[in-house]
Length: 86
Image 1 (cartoon, rainbow, N blue to C red):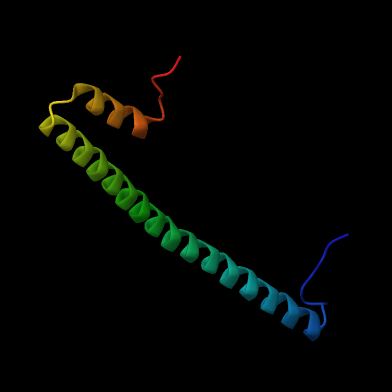
Image 2: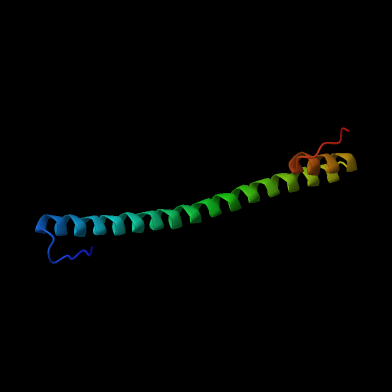
């Protein structure tokens, strides 16, 4: 049982060609959007990391200006998710 495009109807050939074009176009669109969003997600992660780093740095500098070592430790623990309570 073999299939030959020569014996297929014109409507089938048109539908097949349109289907293949549609699949290629959708695949390209998915690839394009994935690449676009991957770059924006990376930029957002970098911005978030920078904001958190600046906040921790500011907290540590203020604690060091007050010469309070426990405040420095609390600043680090606050952003690391650790707690001092057992």
